[in-house]
Image 1 (cartoon, rainbow, N blue to C red):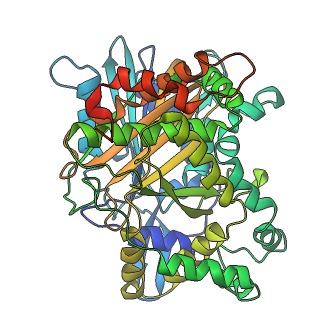
Image 2: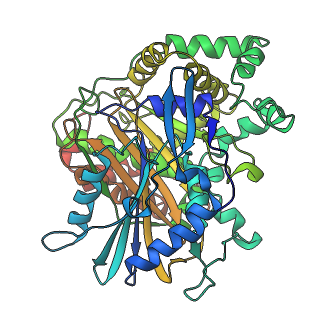
Length: 495
């Protein structure tokens, strides 16, 4: 294993994520990988030793908080057996039991006296195996962790053990679903947030020097306006997705969508993959509220915090956190799925020139370097302005193998913070789009009742396109009566 110095100061941003840990919101990223073939425990342990630990020695270190700040320190008693564990499923050992196990694990804190990560292997799952992994957010963000996980896999079952997967040019575009998914926002990085990249290239890394973002912010009237807009932003709508949190989280994932179909629908509607998927998310949340008998005014908004990647391609594999945040209001009050697509497209376009991502990055870095008593009030204020965290991380376009076993499905969930109790995760893998939902059990007892509606909302959009004459944009008024017939009168907000 490469030499790593015994103690290293943790950056302000990573310290902020370390200190966000609360019993009601644990700051760990949780992933589930389902394998078509059996994966022996010893084989998984070998992969973790020869790739995960050898290429990323950070994971042999623990985070230690002291009066002078937070530091990475080598664990003098490191034992891989405490981090790579066997675990079994009770009963029928089916998908519902796997979801329940993932829920229990994401509700259980990691041990802060050791490196904060674990791989849990279910050796016998539906003829194959499954792996649940937990990694504390202070180690890295989702973009970096996907690259870490890819380094554990191969493109063939018989690949050499030490081979590290590199994405080829043929699949580079499809593997970068993150950029297409948030394309309108990501353009900010190349235009108004160009300074963020320039600072990195000049060695004045915002991660290490977050105050630079604010020095830049003071120079522009638009930035001042953005700061005021965030500060004056009202608290999010009071729905059943917002409320007092407990310690138990529940997770579920839906049957994946065909990415090629999503891209086709987006092209026909003149929008992006992002518009289509977010419209499906908003529709699923709306349908659940309607089923619960909640009032749904036409102007009802549900605000989500959306992470925005601020890494350059060459920095993608570097550990640590380097992303900004934007606030996106989902139009759950709009019943017509087509109108929801167009409304989301308009709102995402408005975020093109937003300074929110770089301001959020600088804010996290600044409060992370300051006292914890300053950080918590800031996080509480921000969390009141949203009901969910919505994330998308790109996976590879081709099938991969872990320890010689084919990876058939994978999903992940990132933590929330403060009083946010819902997380929506979207991940592309092998030309399929996977939806996952994590909720606080006190708010939503059965997440499957929400996540199970995503596919149906997408099918409504698909039906909209199929009902439209070739070469013409779908007419929302013309198809509205058909959608009402499909949903029934109880789903009509005017009934």
